Image 1 (cartoon, rainbow, N blue to C red):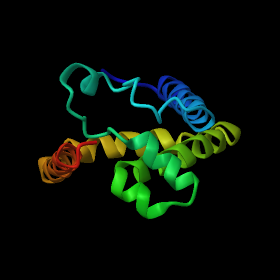
Image 2 (image 1 turned 180 degrees about the vertical axis):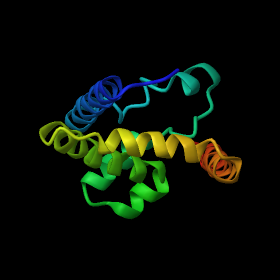
Image 3 (image 1 turned 60 degrees about the vertical axis):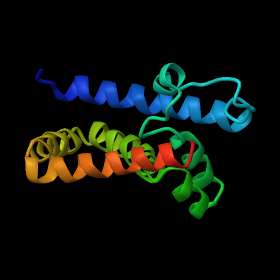
Length: 138
């Protein structure tokens, strides 16, 4: 499937907006604290955490300045936090100055990530994180 600039930017905008709304709800309510509600469909159906389980709590820890807690909950929270800050800014700049630097970056990264010498180590890191999530009983 080929994606154009407008589709990508719309998808990224909606994804970031949804992420910020979910983060706000998670931070202002006890929605994620009680374990009565599982929001992860993988954990809900298999009773095993997915590689990204704990990411919301990790991002909340980063926002609250608890950086070591964030790392121990799920290191992917750092990647998500960076994306949630950079992507909206990058989108705004591209739209305001009528450029497509984010789109070009996306295409370049997509090409790089298709190369086994980069894809395989990244997949191994995600699998290690998944095993770690399982062993710590996340």
